[in-house]
Length: 208
Image (cartoon, rainbow, N blue to C red):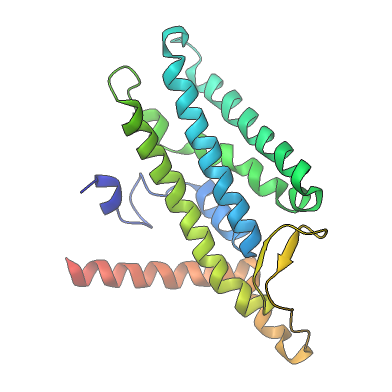
């Protein structure tokens, strides 16, 4: 089994939540399901296109300033994704713009690009590893959104529509349910993160 699949989700160095940017993405992008889906696609977009460009341009890739080039490349790809999202839905692009611009930061802070050897690794293997890391965080974001949005907003949303998102079922506006919306805020995300970490630790301990 691939080592990436066996790492401890909340602790190891090569996991989605090992960087501050990864935790920030999880907390901010999981408030609505629509935001989580957009962010998950952005992660795959930046990761996979970055590794593709790096692999096929390695004959002309300079030995000096690799980190600076990686910063420029990931930032450019993140901006391109945001521009394409703007054409699709300007309101959704405005609502998720800050989160999407954090994706290059997460990519740069990841250990994946510092560990890969472009000269020896196969392209399919590189693409699988980057997709695995980006996809695992994307799945986490969507999973948290599926919990936070129904409890906090009494609805589920998908990208699209004149307001940027389309709600699958109407929002319940009863004032008596307003206190439960704390789960849709950052505090609720920290609570879910703590519960998830404890649950994962217990499962890992029982299987060891």
